[in-house]
Amino acid sequence: MNTMLRKSVLGIAGLAFTGGVFAGPIAAHADAGPVEGKPVAVAVQADKPDTAKLIPHGVQGAQSKITLNDEQTANAKAIIAATKKAGLPERAAVISIATSLQESKLENLGHLGDKNDHDSLGLFQQRPSSGWGTPEQITDPEYSTLAFEKGLKQVDGWQDMPLTEAAQTVQVSAYPDAYAQWEQQAADIVAQHWNS
Image 1 (cartoon, rainbow, N blue to C red):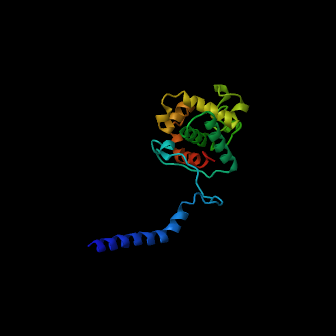
Image 2: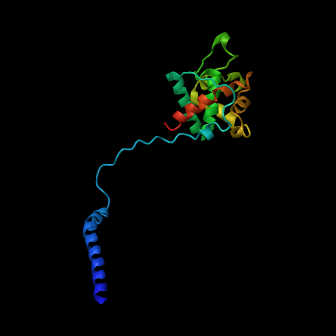
Image 3: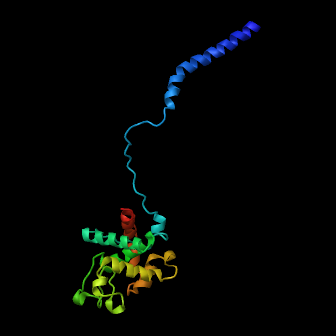
């Protein structure tokens, strides 16, 4: 029995040694430390704003959409930049862009003569006679956005309101429900350009 036990122990030791010989060199290279080489480029999409933040209430009613030209896209980007400058969240940019889509189709409008609503100008159709600023200020996209958002910040609970209600409280439009139709496109624009 003693001989049998010795043979078993030696057999197990032999297996362990053989396994160590075969696994040893592989295991030794596994802990070699960091591998030298060039980093691999991985395409990572910049984080897009959360849809729940952009459209917290879901869109209301039928949605409109227009194809933007370069000028309109630049104006949308200017609204986003001004919103960031004001320290406001993505939702404020959605409300601002939807308002501008309704008021001017994101075109920085000058005086339109008889077609004009009184003396309304710029992206938001703001009126110098109502205290929004000078014509030069109102037709500056950054200034007009900051002026609109200053009014928005004065609306208690604007963050929790449906878009059309928040926009209307600032704009006091004859068509208070018209802003809602632009919410999806405004959210899409903000999602596309917020981090670009």
